Length: 120
Image 1: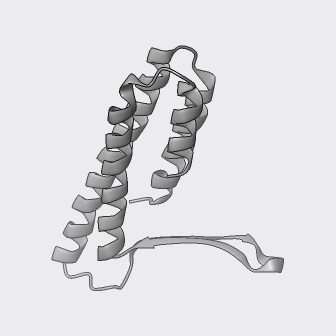
Image 2 (image 1 turned 60 degrees about the vertical axis):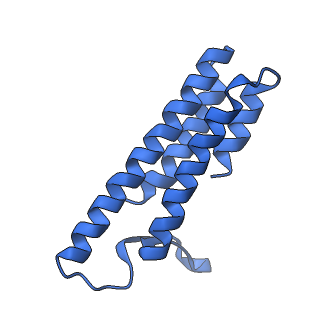
């Protein structure tokens, strides 16, 4: 599984929130983005358990890395272990709960949902 999807999806959702107009559309985009994030987290959990059950005992799974700027030693590297899976799932639950709890918010809704999603 590509873990970069878990980073890119909140960014896409935040940008989509900036582009839509109207309270209902902002709420809908925020809810769909957080629900998609939650689904991706459960897919990650499934693949993680499948890898562990198949005997993969590496410390981190689904690792990927890219050299961004070699002259300064700037790299991008992601991977998950058991504790990070739990933290990713907890974050996804908190984000979708936050969107649902703040559903009745009327003032500055676009700014509220943009800020909430982009900090994920």
